[in-house]
Amino acid sequence: MPILIDGKKTSDQIKSEIAARVAEIRAEGGKIPHLAAVLVGNDGASQTYVGAKVKACEQVGFESTLVRLEDEVSEEELLKVVEDINQNPAIDGLIVQLPLPKHISVEKVTNKIKPEKDVDGFTPANVGRMTLGWPAYVAATPYGIVELLKRYKIETSGKHCVVIGRSHIVGSPMSILMARNDYPGNCTVTLTHSRTKNLPEITKAADILIVAIGKPEFVTADMVKEGAVVVDVGIHRIDDSTKKSGFRLIGDVKFEEVAAKASAITPVPGGVGPMTIASLLYNTLLAAERKVFQ
Ligand code: GUN
Image (cartoon, rainbow, N blue to C red):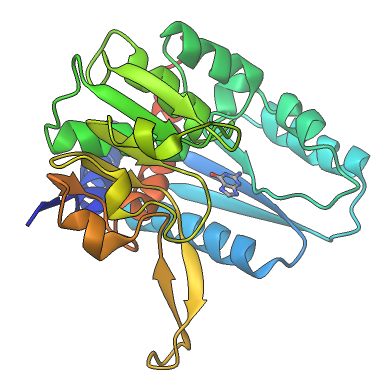
């Protein structure tokens, strides 16, 4: 059996490390980290995610503010809310939950967030800093994956890392982080996407395979090399009448058959997913302690 890379256990560990640091800050009379989350509209998944982020803040002793806005809010009003938070010295970190309604430009809103408070790591300033290897807020999913590889002591130097998917928030930053001159990193990286030809040939050459394509059970055993490390970023709900909820969660990787060949693998659920909140908390702590932008 492969090593099961347990994101739930690791994120709990990180949360308790952060809680311990907050207790120290409190004892020193320092600034308690404060995250503000802006949620527009009533999308069910977004409400769940933001609710989980606010709850996690409470768990580690952070302060949090949730700003809820109507679906019909104008772009101008949303930009004003972001600017007010930018200017508010009580708030260290700011996230605007995505997706936004169609009449609002994600680019304009993202670009309005002060890079010093951009704990999602979505602004051009933070993406640029990360790319240059400067201190930066790294987006939650890539940061969570890097942290899992580190804490499970996965060897990366000189390995061939294949990333499937080139999104701005997962595939593209993952390819940059795995190629950087650091640990985890120093990989030879291949970034693949929807136009890639002969994908199975490429994935079969991967020592480390990072799958963020957004298609349920896309990666099958015949696409994976014996002994590969497999990281599954996908999460999909599928109907399952045997479950009380009526559904179960699966990833972008056909877990059972791929696990039989892998040396280490992240499950879904309980792999990359739980790490994203830990990453957000970690970035918020960095923001409060002014560790990224001095
Ligand atoms: N929507 C889905 N994932 C994220 C995330 O990491 N941050 C924000 N702001 N919105 C999201």
